[in-house]
Length: 160
Image (cartoon, rainbow, N blue to C red; front, side, top):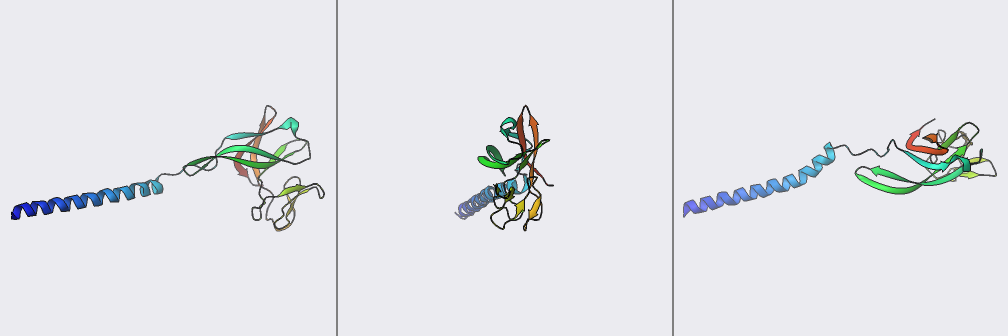
């Protein structure tokens, strides 16, 4: 009977140790994957069509709404976003929709012929340069190109 108890005790200890190992592996594997596997980049190198160049009026900024697919870590999201597009005689510029001071959404003010941020009254010229206010740098621009009469932008920013 003493051997049966001893064997049963070894069996229970083995089962408890095995369950502990399974629980440890269940917790450690996702944590190791999170720490060791690099998530996908938020910014892709793909270009997205946002505007038809023939419909843009030179010298008049236009807020363009478009859809993009954004990857945030392991999550893939389809979202609607905007960009300010300015067509000039020689090029077309697409600006990021947030002020470089604190990230507020700015707008075009026809009265002063400038971009105006309502949060802290930063004012930006048609080319995105700072006219006045606390903004530390010009408006951020999207990397862009034209193809077949369409404006294509990347989600990567080029800082001027």
